[in-house]
Length: 188
Image (tube, rainbow, N blue to C red):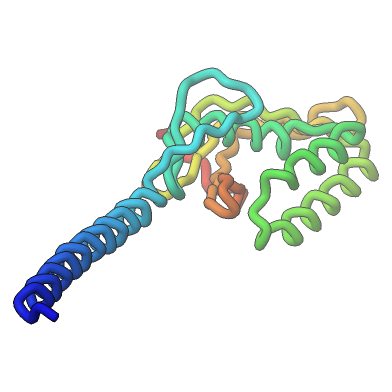
């Protein structure tokens, strides 16, 4: 048995093990780095969402949407809620509830059912003509200013300037309505 030869082979195996350990360490480090990059990119991917009708281009990134998206969705939501008759309020309510935040679903459904019952009972219709849309990307909300006309049995009973604030939120990979409230009218 040649001691020098065995000693050389042992040194050679140790050197190979060190180089393999360095290679495995470099791969593990690159895997951790790749994972960190993927995690950092998760919230910045823009998702293209299509509102009911397209008039302008827009973007949605993470939990934020562009003002163009807020304007298009907000005007559609205002139409669903404010431009109703006894024969259209039920199907508009059903469409609207598909866009509502899950936490607000019950409250808005009850509100719309009460309004539907009231409109049917007094045979009323409302028509909303938006005059100005003021979107805020910071608060993810839209201020809709316009004229609300109310007809009861075909006779106009009100024709007032109104303002409504629509708040949007992000849940389940979609933008949802978080709130729809009348606010004091002020020309912007």
